[in-house]
Image (cartoon, rainbow, N blue to C red):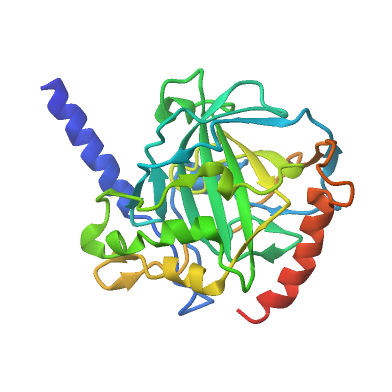
Length: 302
C-alpha cells in the first residue's frame, strides 16, 4: 500500500510538472510568460537575471577544479522531457570543487536552453547549456533542492558563428531519436562519445550569485556560475533544437525563462589569476567582452 502511494504521488508530480511551459515567442513576441505558481512567483532569489559587468562586485577565488570532465562518455543517455534536451548517465563521477564552493559537487545532468536564459549587459545569446551539479553531502537532487548550498549550475553561453560546434554537433546527431512527441520521455543513447569538458570554455572569469532553478519548482538552492567566455555555435545547429516536439506536431521553438528581479543580490565577477599557456593569449574576461561586441552585431540578424 505504501509503495502504491509513492507511485501515485510520483504520477501526480509528473502530471503537474507537465502543465507548465513557455510562450512561443517565435510566433508571437508579445505573448506573456506564464505564471508557474508557488516559489516561481513569490521567490526573492529567482533565476535567470541580467548580469552587468560594471555593476558586479569584483572578486578573486581559488581556481575551480574539475575531476573526470575530460573523460569521454561513451554511453550517455539523451531524453526529450518536453521542456529541454537532457543528458545523463555518466560513466564516472564528475566532481566540481574549488572557487567559492564550500563542498564537492557532482554532475547530475546537462540540458540546453535555446535562446539563453541569462543575459550579459542586456545581450541574449542563441544557446545556453546548463551543467547541473548536486552537493555530495546530500543523497539526491530532491534533498539538495531544500538547501541553499544544495546545487551548483555552470551556465555556458554560445555566440553565433559560421563554424559548427563539434560538441553540440555530437548531441545533434542523435536528436532524430527523441524529437517527436511520441518519443518524449523515452531515453536513447547518444551516438557519439562526448567529454563534458568539450562543453566548457575558459573558466578564468565568471559571474556567480545565489539563485534558483529556472524551471518548477524554482527552488532557491542554486549557486550559479555563468562563464564570461563563450563557445561558438551556428544558427543551423540552434534551429535543430527548435524542432523538438512537446505536444503532437507542436515544436519547442524556445525554452528560456523570462529575466527575474535581482532584488539587491550580490553578483560577483570572479577572475582567477592563473598563468596562461601562451603569453599572448587573452584572459577569458577580455575575450568574452570582445565576443559580446560581435554578438550584439550578429543578434540583429536573428
